[in-house]
Image (cartoon, rainbow, N blue to C red):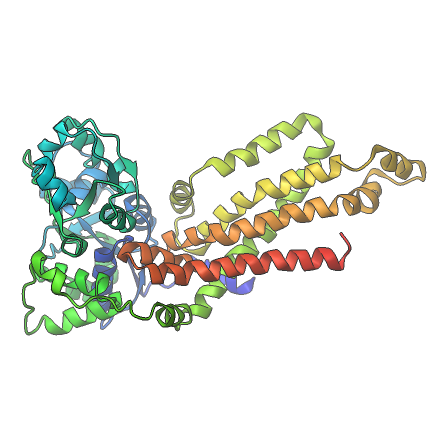
Length: 501
């Protein structure tokens, strides 16, 4: 418990640490590592990887949990500042300054959104530009969650081009495989994605110029410049240093060759002094592919890498602490619901409503309320999700105690509290433990959401695997989480059998 409390200390307890954030897609991971390696000669820095979507990483920036992260001018314009039309850089900087934020250091490349489909479908249907999609309502669209909901994404695009399709939402990393297997017909892509060449996709022309420029820049807290002047000066040397071809080449190394984000960033910074050869999208197919010849050995290596025990401890800490705290709150609530019919519906409704709040939305709200990312908001979210099964089973177990036994307890002179302690709870214990077991097992799986806000756990591997479309990486996170859930189930069954419940 002491370690857990240390882990949830405020992000800026040590003001000498620069905190760098990134979103959960390959390019953002790589850029985050480039910022980390550029700043570390001058300051102690940490990279909080894969902090969910724009809402999560922006909340982390505004609350001071991170100091800087790479973003794109179009995203800042439409998602951060909520503009309906394209704004000038000067206007954007002025509005950001009112929020205590700054936008600077254009890195040198534009990574715009685009729509892509299989070349054979494009030729067969005569679809080469986005406006052509209006005459093909039968096409199955699959769009990434953020693109589906953002201001400059699907809603505005569908209105601009009068598109009749009804897209489904699908993680971008999975969407490429779905498109290749003809499970969907069109997906949204980033223009610098290595997967475009790998799968031989055709990027449709944005003939009505809907998408603005998405020039890569740094979004940062204004107070960071004074706190880390040397590191900030070093970051400014990155201005204009990454071309679109170079960014594409780095994405290829991570996604197709299986190199780590840190290695890709380090190689870029070393080679940049002598220049990098340009890589065109058509050359991607010739890139050295990720070695899939021995999945078993690759999986074992990923499972038991140098972060295995760290991720295991983080996952167990999240589950154990959240379930223990949930027991402290839920057991009394369950007793109250059982013996106070008037408040039963209110209690059950409240804990039931908590289950309906989407995890990412809850995490975003908690980051804003707590002013930090990491274990604390993740732990609170898991605590809230664990309340329902414990409250429900406690209430149900107590209500199932035979009325005759309760009357017998009162007849021999037991007070209400004594009857609860010596008769009701022991008889209801199997049902109560079943609720705690359910909460614990479910939280083992739910704890993977912690990775979206930098709290670690096995979900970190799953999120990275989704970002780079690496099934081995995803299995390296899913398998230990499943094993931990099984061990949790066996522990409770052993405890139940030992106590004869």
